[in-house]
Image 1 (cartoon, rainbow over the protein chains, first blue to last red):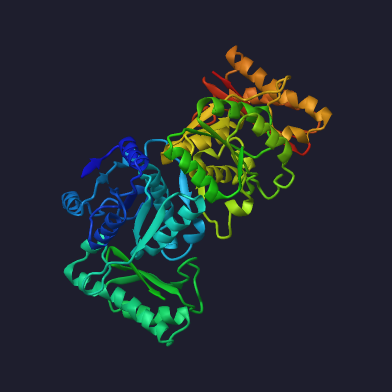
Image 2 (cartoon, each protein chain N blue to C red; image 1 turned 90 degrees about the horizontal axis):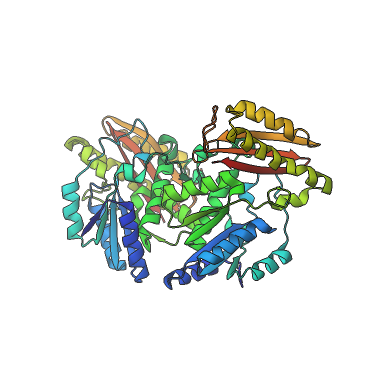
Length: 281
Length: 281
């Protein structure tokens, strides 16, 4: 596996692949790789000639009070995982390489960032859209792989690709869960053992929500949110940012639940923020 | 010359050229072509295997009170001019094709749009950056040609290319002027004969400004602006939006004039807005 730190080198490697007619699968990550990332990489490996993974903890998508500094970094572990997954190239630029002095461009999809995590993380999705737009220019992928756990992020990127007609196909991959149902996340590492055991209630609440909608027991979002909040409140030291029901394409909130629907939630357990979602098909 | 109205067709034509190793020169325009456009096209013709010109009056870069509807459209004239310049392909999408329902992405360079035309045309450069980013994805140019008359636009695009590492080279081309010095502009057509004769004073004022700085007669922007405003005020029915001295790279205003400097102005004559600039090297 080639490890590349310079943008110029990554871009010329990518353009060379393209000129040789090789398809490129791209998995952008912030490292601290887990089974969710692995599933994206396996799918990329399966569908493309070349697989490129990036590891870049993107400062632009963290708010000033957020966990940029303490976000987990596990480079040795990640390198082993990538080599074992037969990744062709790892792109690992520094923050200075990605955002040199004078950097001033923003890419944003304001209409999709007024809901769900948007109001709780101002500027977050702008940071995501900007870095992904830049990574796409550098890596020139045929296909890019994103997990549905970060559903809103996936929709923002999808909208950006479609609106700007970027010549890349977004491949949405199902959320990978641990045995008990908790969605894989690099931030799960922050949880104490006890908190980790309680965290599964986030998934259980969403699962219950899907049942209640599928069984037509509940059809109003506000009632559903209230019911699921009761479940979440049994987690010690929990704080609920939101629990919302939205249209899975436009992300517009639904007062009366129509299907398909996305039930999404964000909670804090102590100092760790967790998100998850389920689709009611 | 091929005329293409569909994005999909344009993109596949462009990608075909690229795969065949052909360099593509791209000149994005809003039509109503004049000698300024012609000079961009000739240069693109000279430096590339393939030349693509777009004509698209971009609604996103006009404010609600601006002249989108009455912006000059001269398709017959333009088609002749393009054929005579041996352009390979004309890309001419509809507004519906470029901005279908649900379009929601913005590209912007806020730091460069707080000065000069920015405050007078809120959203204008965001509209420019967004459409150019999209046109680049569609046309995949090797080089893109912009005129220095729209100096701020050129800087915004240049910053965007550099920041996002778009694989395209911006080629800045000198302002083309009519015999008396007035910068070529599609909007010159709006001027009555009498106003047209007076309009040259915009260039004369800037030319005088350059002299006063080069001869070290004036070194403070506020005094220079005051002096040049006196010249502009002799135009009947004139309104001065601004006359500013800024750093030609960062566009930061200079109180005390250092060189190189950009002296730029925007004025209204009746209902027609004109811009121009000179560099003091």
